[in-house]
Each structure stands twice: as structure tokens, then as C-alpha cells.
Amino acid sequence: MKKLTGRVSQKRGLPPGVMVHVGEKKLDDVKILVIEYNEKEYNICEVKSLAECKSAVKKPTVRWINVVGIHRVDAIAEVGSYFDIHPLVIEDVLNTNQRPKLDVWDEYSYIVLTILHFDDEKNEIIPEQVSIILFRDTVITFQETAGDDFIPIIDRVINAQGRIRRQGADFLACALLDSIVDNYFGVLEKLGERIEAIEDEVIANPQTETVNELHFLKREMIFLRKSVWPLREVIGSLERGQSPMVDENTLVYFKDIYDHVIQVIDTIELFRDMLSGMVDVYLSSINNRMNEVMKLLTIITTIFIPLSFIAGVYGMNFKFMPELEWPRGYFYVLAFMLAIALLMLGLFKRKKWL
Image 1 (tube, helix red, strand yellow):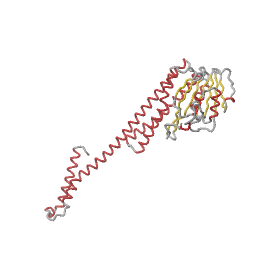
Image 2 (spheres, helix red, strand yellow):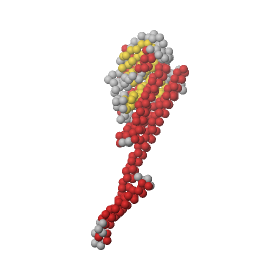
Image 3 (cartoon, helix red, strand yellow):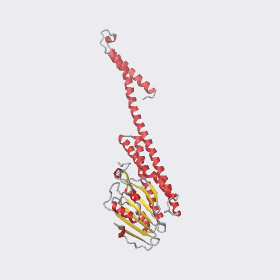
Image 4 (cartoon, one colour):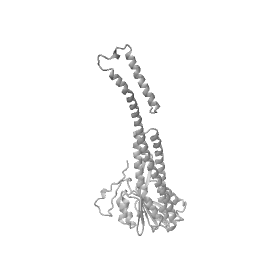
């Protein structure tokens, strides 16, 4: 089960700006993909150092540098030094437990958010932190793993699909954010299917495994809310034009992403309410089942109380008891006891206790 808080204690006592990787090492080495393009041409090269990539594009409009793997502090520091990025920003890039946020600097804007994937084998959400640094003509992205989240964006650059080759770096950053947010819907669909399945199980046949599954899903919803809710403020700030790196013509696209984030948040809140309701239904079902058992035991006990009394009376060892001399006394008492039992059963059925 994933932790809701990260291990940031290892930075305790260190001064601000010290570059220390906080998180899990997910790759063996760092890979850097450099994509330069304008409306007419593009160039892509994969390198281990920025100095290795030689541009083949004349007057590139936009440069996109995608750094995969952030565990090597020296490689990330080299990128930061190449673009004169403040050490505090590089420190945040290396810390994979960041809350989604937007930091606006004079020459660039720094955006951090979380990519979410649903692992079908483990049946859980796998998070990945992504950092985006937006310059006037350059976008730098830092990923923990080499996923396929940005492949559609690369294909659009290669095939000149849509507006991406005709727009600036701010539109590229917008496309990256839109791809990440749209991926949230796929994760929510998977969780929605699980919630619907467990909802039927809670109503039909609640088991101990059911409450364990409910507890797991509630933790997933808490993690989702923690990852997505702050993004509302981030996209809202970009949509209001608080970053000087975003052109006015691009603001409308950020507004569309903002609407998607609101929809995601509403769905998360809906799922949380459904899970809370299912916990109440589960507890009510268990209580009702216990009440039925107790009612049955109470009815059985109530029937046998007078029968036990009669048996106890005739079990006393007094010498002078008239009924002991009756030839058919044993059968009379049994018939009397049976009549009492049937009478009480009829009474319970009339009152609809059975």
C-alpha cells in the first residue's frame, strides 16, 4: 500500500538549495530527449548530455527537453546550470514528494504535478511526479520513469498535427498538462468499475474481504484528492494569466484544462461519498444479520422458558405429588408442553416476529 506522506526527513538539517534526491530510484540511468521544431521542420535527438545534441533546425521556434530519470543529482544539476535555473527549483525537481504547485520566476515558470497510472496487475494507482519548467521558447520536463504519457505529443510534433507546430512553448506546456489531466479520467474509470462491483457485493453478500477492499479504495481516494485538488489552483493561476510565459491566446486552452480538473475533482468527491455510504451500508448489513441471529435465539429461548419451568417442577423429588400417580401423566405433560410451544409460535407469527 502506498504511503500518503513521503520520506522528507532525510533532508533534515540541510540548508535550502542543497540538491538531494528524495524518492525511489526507478531507472538505471538518465536519458535526455531533445526536440526542436518550427512550423516547417523538426529535429529529435536522444543524448545523455545536452552538449551532445546538435541542432539541425534553422531558427527553431520551440525546444522541448525531456529528462527521464531524476535520481542522478549531477545530471539534473547540469541541466539546471545550462539554463541558469535557481537551485531551489532544482531542489524541488529532485524531491518527488512535492505538492502540485506553480512558481513564477522572472525568466521561467515552474510547474510540478503528478501523473497517475492504474496498474491492472497490482490493481492499484501508480503515481509519478512530473516537473515542467516553461521558458519563452523552451520547455523542460523531468520524469521519474520512461512512460508513454508524452508519446502522443511527440507524434503530433513529428506529424505536424493540430496547432502545436504553429504555436509557442506555452502551447506545448499546455498540451503536456492536458495529456496528464486527461489520463486521470482513465484512472477514474478503472476505480469506478471496482466501486460498482463492490457496491453490489456490499448489498448482496458482505464479507470480511469487502471491508478490506473498501478501506483500500478509501485510501486510494485520499491519495487521488491529495494529488489532484491542488492542481485546481495551479491551472487556475495559469488560466488567469499569472505566468508571464503564457501568451494571451493560449489562456483559453488552459481554461479547458481547468474545466477538466474540476470534473476530475467532482468525480473523486462523488466516489468518496459513495465509499463512505458503502461503509455505512456494510455496517448496517452486519448489524442486521446479527439482529436476525439474536432474534432467532431469543425466540427459541422464549419458547423453552415455560417448558423448562414445567420440566423443573416435575423434576423435584417430593414424595406426595398427585400427578406422579397418573397412569398417563407423562403423556399429558408432554402434550401440554407441545401445546404451549405451538401457542407461542402462533403468537410470534401473528405479531410477524417470524
